[in-house]
Amino acid sequence: MSKIRCIIVEDEPLAVKVLVDYISQVPFLELKGSFKDAILASEFLRDQEVDLIFLDIHLPKLKGMAFLKTLAHQPAVIITTAYHQYAVEGFSLNVTDYLLKPFEFERFLVAVNKVRSAGRVGKVPGEVVEKKDFIFLNVQKKKVKIQFSEIVYIESQREYIRIVTTKGEYLSKLSTHEIEEMLPSQQFKRIHRSYIVAVSKIESYTAEAVEVSGVSVPVGRGYKEVLEGL
Image (tube, rainbow, N blue to C red; front, side):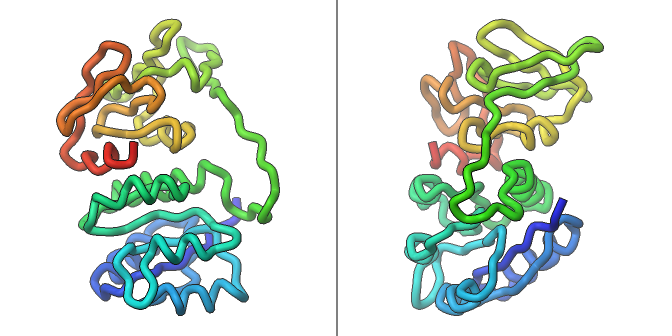
């Protein structure tokens, strides 16, 4: 697979340093540049194509969200900010993920893996990409087809995951990180280190728990901002 060409649009030197360090640790990422404001980034993008933008919201001259609206062909975008209240607007602009500062490398890796699994690399503007609505998982020595629309939630159980669907439950030897990469990021949200839920199956939620099909699933401390984008 081609490397994911990315840029950083961030005016805080420390935040830039953290992102540069994280990017350098991921073999499939290639940093093409770092810009302290959106105007400089826009000038770069006139002549260069990128697959991913790490974008801060509070920028001088032109704010992050306003910058996104100016892009004729938007690449994948990962928002990086200290302000969780902008998550709803971010997801409405089809961003891939929303990282609340300060974030650890593990959380960063989850975000960039979403970009990788979404197949955005090398996509030609306007090209139609066929999207699958199912996955095949190894369950008891056979491949089982599971429709995304049937998944209610997924729970980590040590080296296995438990997939709860409207038709039944399945155990597969995968990590939550691995299954998360296979799922459409707009349809499924990780709300806990051990839980991923289907957005369409959410009946209600608080800062502490999400109710999916009559089951209460806990919300992890580091994942509370995810709910802001629902």
